[in-house]
Structures are given as structure tokens and as C-alpha cells.
Image (cartoon, rainbow, N blue to C red):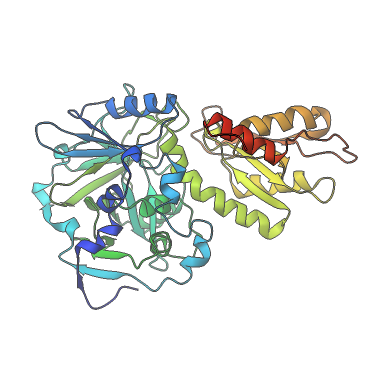
Length: 457
């Protein structure tokens, strides 16, 4: 999978880095503050910006050291879509994956600390909410190898700093890393992993995605960057890591070791102690010169939610269309924090909207409410979705509930990993004859010209 001939990193290759991404931003897409890093500050800045419907990338520069911290990288769909390629057909594009390019003397290993020199307290990690059990790494993407086929898997897991070389980690997503860990423990072995922090957004989007096997997660990163991923072998286990990552932590998740982890402020907007209580021992830290710390603001922040929703919307939509071509669009709204979905379609028969919703519930166990609307409703505009629900729905006819189905355990209202699922069919019923109001496009254009101060035609 990896090219045999090593290459040397060049300035042009920074296009695969966090630094290259930041350099590509316009002045209105990146807001800079000179201020000392401290607990809770980044979250407060992002929250205040969101209240103003403003979603720029945020950069803090320490006035004493010049050290930089960036956050809110994934809060703006337009910024991401302008710099991440093949979003709509990433699964197909990833099939063209030709492997990885190994980089000699990679930037991510300009500084190496191993063994007794490892000191996590030197990292610029902070608490995000007063209820957090301690400082948390929120932007670390775990790379692990599938023990069955060697496939590389990226995933997010919250990481509580607990000592110079110890991190408490939770695998509560019950995803691939959970399966790898179970296999390692059954064999009585620790699980080797590498964690990168600070990288091109493509790597982060993949880390928050559920890449279908047998595709390698690096294939999706390459598709999003429209380039062959440049990597380096980690210094201990030789796991391929992004060559331009700002930081890389390497070590082992200990077999059959458990310690309390949490509470932590999750995307639901609640603090939770639910955790698998795993222990990650860090054997090496490598980092770039003048390394930039990338933080992912947790809690009910838009970047926390959009990061995983962006690709999930596409993957789920493609799967739905394979079975029901009448499906047109899918939105996972922020206020649903992964638990709500709006689906538009052009149903050809009674009951087809319900069929689509049931299929979507099966594809994504996180979902607990789905509203289906006709394609004349913009699912990315919540006012339109709820207008359709108000005017096209009768509860006794169009609402159904499926009790006690598998769900995400971070839902604070769930019971033992089970929740009820509710579907609302807000599509036009048979015999519908009400006409939706509309305005001529010419009138809209003239009105827009007047509002913008242009002379009317």
C-alpha cells in the first residue's frame, strides 16, 4: 500500500497540512486574537460568535511565546466545501486509491520525545467546561490497523490527560476501534495506536466518518484532498501517520485495564461520565517546529456537530437512494445533535415516506426523530420543514413510534442503550389539492435590486 521509494517533503506539500489550509483562508474566514490560552476561553469565543451567526476559524496567539491555537475549523460548510474535494462522490473517488507516499524526514517528526521524555503536561491542553474531569484532548484522531486485514481506521475518542504519559480514553462509539480493542484483549495484547493532532480538514472529516469496509480510511482522505496522502511511519510501531501533522502521540491502549474517565461536555449539550474507561499509555510524542495546537470545541458547538454530519448526510443519502430513488435530500440539523433528520422525497405511493424513514432508522442508530417532506421543501431550512409539518400532517394519520430500539448511549434520555423512534410523514397526502404560494422570479429580482440599492429595471 505504501510506496517503497521515500520522498522529501517540500513547501508545495503543505497543501496537505493544517498550515496550508489556514493560509488559504480569506480575512473574513479567519479571526485572530492575541491572548494567553486559558481554560474555557475558546468555547466562550465560539459560543458568542455562534449567537451572532458567525462561523469563522478562530486563532489565538499567545503574546509571550507566539504559540498558536486554532479552533472552529469545521463550523462553516462553505469554507470546507471550498477546500475539500469530491464531497458528493467521495466513496466512488476513493476506489481509485493508489496507496500512500512515504516521506523522508517528515515535518511531524522534527521533534521527538520518547520514553521518560514524554510529558503530556507540556501540551497546551485545557478544560472546556467547569464540569470536565480535567484537561481533554478533543482534536486527536486515532489511527489503528484492522487486525484482520491491516486496513487503516481513523476515529475520534475523547482523551483525558491523567499523568505525564497516561490518558483516559472512551470507546463509547462502539465502532471499529472498539472491535479492534476487543480482539486485542481476547488475545491478551495491548492495542497499538497513533493519534495525530493538527492536520488538513480532510483527515478530520474522515475521522468522523464511517468509511465502509473494505475501503481504507486513507483512501477517503486522499479523495478529499484530491492527492496521494503523504505519510510517515510512527517512531515506535511504524503506523502510517500524516506527514504534516502538527503533533503525533503514539502508544498502547492497555488490555483489560480500566480507570474512571469523565465527566466531559458532550455534543448533546450535557456533561456525562458514561465511558468505556480505557487507558492509553503514551510511549512517544513527535511534533513540528512551532507546532500549532488544533482544538475542537466540544459540547453543543456547531463544529463538533457539523464535522461528523457533513459526510454522514452524504453516505446515508446515497444508501437511501440505492433502495428508494425517490429520495432527494437529507439534513441532520444542529438542534437535533445527531438525533434528528429531515428527509425530502417525491413519494410515488402511499406509505413510501414511512418506508424511507424506517430504512433510515435502520441505517443510523443515533436517529430518534425523522421528518419526511416533499421535494418542494428545503430540508436545510428548518422553518420550511416545520411549516410543512404544520400544514400537511395529522398526528393520528402521519405519526408513528417504534419503541425500544438500539440508540446512542450518550442520549441522556435513553435507557440501557435503548430509545423510541418517531417518524413524521409531512409529505402531501393522497388527493392533495392545496396550492403553495409563490412569487414571480422577475419580481424577486427587482426586489433584490431595490434592497441592495440598485436602480430598478
